[in-house]
Amino acid sequence: MKKNEVREAASGCDIKDLRGTPQLREAAARWFYEKWGVAEGVPEQEYLDSIDSSIKGDAPFPRWYVVVSRDGDIIAGAGVIDNDFHERKDLAPNICALYVEPEFRCHGIAGCLLEKICGDMKQESIEAMYLVTDHTGFYERYGWEFMGMVKSEDGGDLRMYVRK
Image 1: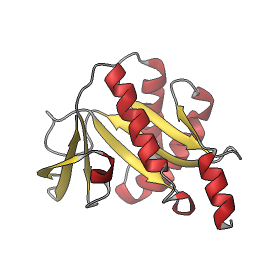
Image 2: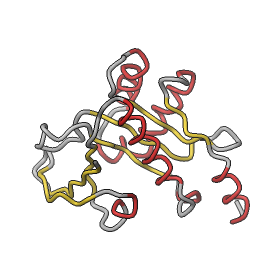
Image 3: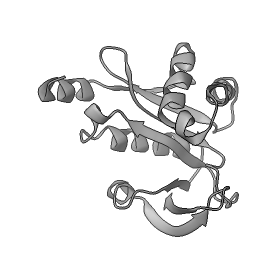
Image 4: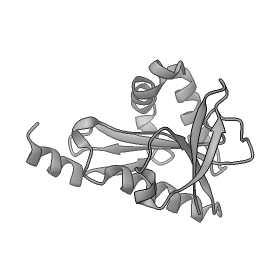
């Protein structure tokens, strides 16, 4: 895809809350699994179960979002879950599985997705959101503050961020 085609496709993206678009549930579960599950050892069925819980539930989370291009392809996504596999169970909810397809990066899609998610959570009276990452500098651009290091469930160190 040429650069101007990518820019046009990115600008025409549509953020979908899977609660309102259950017809995307299987494609989304497969997409999240391909982006995160294979490497992290999370089965595709776990994504589908969490997405189904989001669709059927009325609690603020879990909640799953995808960004769909004009062509109908999933090009980005993220979730909101109770805990993203770290020891600080008191820091909830967590944004998880944020991913933008490489050819669509640097067009503000991640920022729009983060804003949408945080806005939706504020409407649910959730004032603080958390996430863990190994990125430095990326989330600060979108209003996130580095809190400190936390231990992952497997004992590794993770960077914890908060946004209020």
